[in-house]
Length: 431
Ligand SMILES: Cc1cc2nc3c(=O)[nH]c(=O)nc-3n(C[C@H](O)[C@H](O)[C@H](O)COP(=O)(O)OP(=O)(O)OC[C@H]3O[C@@H](n4cnc5c(N)ncnc54)[C@H](O)[C@@H]3O)c2cc1C
Image (cartoon, rainbow, N blue to C red; front, side, top):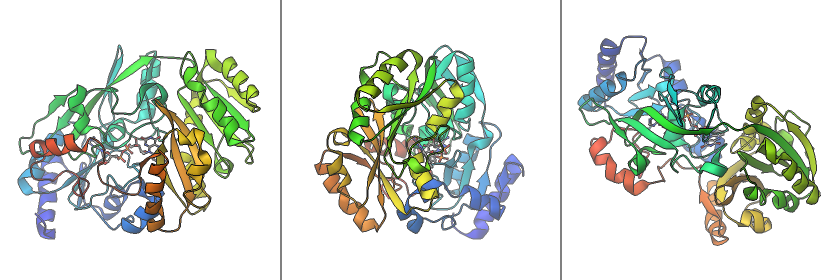
């Protein structure tokens, strides 16, 4: 189906099926839900600016059963469907390149069950709410992104790492216990996947099916505190950063920033913008050890803040957020997601690849990860640096393209069964 009148007819079919409160063709609604946070990339802003690709109809289900019912109709009428949680994805992942239906999952926001070692939710449940309920039950979520207002379905569908990653890895490293998937195969039914079978649906942008319910693992709750330190050199901050994996209880997050990133961080304590800032979510019993490490490295302990709410504030200055804050100040920069020992061992070589570049450091299960932030000149200049970084031993994940790029073989193998007509989030797989 491609013509405007056919799509208008399809919107009427949907309205008759689900009601006018679920189905919208209002241009302002369509425009709002057809864009995500691709604006973090100057390259994507040129290629897919907000408004260039618009859905024809927005559907905001109020019950999970409406998802397979919608997909059955989309299959029958050959209409593309692009799922969307909170729309905070960075790569245009939820942009409806082929129009059709934008499936807005924010209405399915219930935490279904918090049990021993797990939480089950609807796809649109916000991580702030999920985490609050999990903590109230005496447990910790394994992880959540710095965009904690985003949805659990969107985090599994398009995110990768965050607070908790030092101990638990990425969203694809055993966190997911079970996903309930609605395929687009004309049958209007759902099925459950777990274990390695779930990998075809994690960070898959919905191309293999829509997640209608999720069960993820939780751990016993710990007492977390927010630890702020500062250093006069990157190497001194690294001395502490690289010692953190040796602590008896691993930190939940360990972010470090160089000026000028520090100047724009909305911290609850005074951060000296001329110094390297190291911010850690520590388990309370490890604070004394880390304080000693900081002093031994010639650094200063700036503050130790108690209270779980403070750790959330620290978390919102991690991962992509320092780049967002820098861009808010008007600075024309781009970033790359990077990982590898040279971030600790040879930062000058890493910085030398791009003009005026800075490192935002995080800690992963296998050592340093983070963002390389540099002045933006052109797409060609950005791409030209990839081979040089790789030759240094730096792994790269580019936030300047929208193709599905993890578990691709498994996803390609799954799609013919779950989306034989290629209607789910078209343009994201091998585009
Ligand atoms: C400033 C900033 C900081 C960020 N920090 C982090 C971070 O720390 N870690 C991180 O991993 N990411 C981060 N992100 C990216 C993003 O915010 C997260 O991945 C977030 O969890 C995505 O959730 P969402 O609800 O906004 O998903 P959306 O953006 O709505 O969707 C993400 C992808 O999943 C698909 N999708 C959504 N729902 C479903 C579903 N139910 N079934 C199947 N597919 C679905 C969408 O089509 C899209 O491809 C950051 C983004 C910004 C702008």
